[in-house]
Image (cartoon, rainbow over all chains, first blue to last red; front, side, top):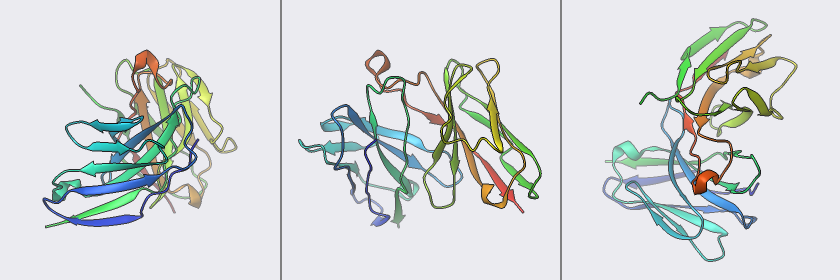
Amino acid sequence: LAKTTQPISMDSYEGQEVNITCSHNNIATNDYITWYQQFPSQGPRFIIQGYKTKVTNEVASLFIPADRKSSTLSLPRVSLSDTAVYYCLVGDLYGGATNKLIFGTGTLLAVQP
Amino acid sequence: EAGVVQSPRYKIIEKKQPVAFWCNPISGHNTLYWYRQNLGQGPELLIRYENEEAVDDSQLPKDRFSAERLKGVDSTLKIQPAELGDSAVYLCASSLSGQWGFSGSYNEQFFGPGTRLTVL
């Protein structure tokens, strides 16, 4: 499974757009990119997933360049409640009964008023 | 719809004592996972079940850890005896299927709130 690298922490202010970039240089052809969010004392929660180009849902957008060696999670107009750890993961879509998620240390996003 | 339920939420024990954690997945989810999360780290997979079968337990320390999912629904993770280094949050998750791309869609994992274990 591809190893991911993301910043340890980021700071932002309420109302700003936040972009968290993840590097995955060894991503394989069948790998999807997935982001999870984790609040203190809670389990991780799925945010968004993509394979290439751009994916948008009601929570975030995910930008993936053509070479897929990186991806950027974009959170529009963050609020204090977006303070959390964000994990970037890659996994084999056709892994043959494999749905193993390998979490790194994640990015701690701190949103200030 | 109820989410993944775990109990207890907190557990404090002395080293060498046994401890057990219980998980009830989302109804209809065939796949169940146990993770361990150390402070400041991401979760690490311990074991994955497809129905009642453990299909990936490569990361489970089998000398002291055991797990079961007898009827393919709820599951129990046990540590006996516990060591100081076992202090962590134990997370349970479930998904519809263990296969990525099943029915053309990603099988999102839903996590419970976890059990925080402190070994003294």
